[in-house]
Each structure stands twice: as structure tokens, then as C-alpha cells.
Length: 132
Image (cartoon, rainbow, N blue to C red; front, top):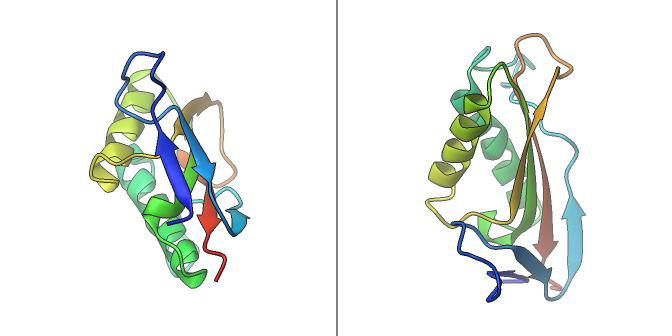
């Protein structure tokens, strides 16, 4: 695995690693991944949890195309078009569930609007790829 996820010894445990190190190989940066289906439609419309999982599933597919997996993610940035702060918490909980608790360093950011109609989530990932 080309990524090491690390918790700081000096900071309180907040349930996620504070940093990640890409140990070897190349670094992959995704574009902002919108929660679209095979026809390019936003799915499910307006649903923070569903769109978080859909976007992460697409990221998982992109990683697989490069011989990588979820454990190779060094950093996630989750953008949520929010009505209330609770939307950020709901998105975070969906990320934790998707990663089965082994979450990479992640920023969850509230934004005013995203590009597509009915889109409320967009996710970017940075991953380490093996040197092979």
C-alpha cells in the first residue's frame, strides 16, 4: 500500500487520521466527482447521503482503473451544498460508513451551490498509486 494514514500523537483523537503520506509511486488527483449515473443524471436528486455514496462509488471505480483502492486515498474533500450545518454531519457520517470507519484525512466543506441541478455533493480525492 503506497499510503500511510497517520494520527498525530500531539492532537486529540477526532476519529480520523490527521495526515497521510504517499510512500512510493505516483499521486492521482481526481476532478470534483459529481454523483451521476450511467446516463449522466444526478442521482439520487437532492439526497446528501445517497449522493455522497454515489460519488464515492465513482471514485472507487476511478481508483480501480489505476490499480488502486479506497485504502490508497490520502485525502478527500467533500463539498456539500447545504441548507443547514446538519447536512455536513450527514455527509461525514456517510463517508465514515462507506469507508467502514477507516476514513482518510477528509475535509467536509459547506458551499452555496454546485454545478448540476439537484446536485448537493461533489467529492475530490488524492490517492497514492503503487510504483509497479
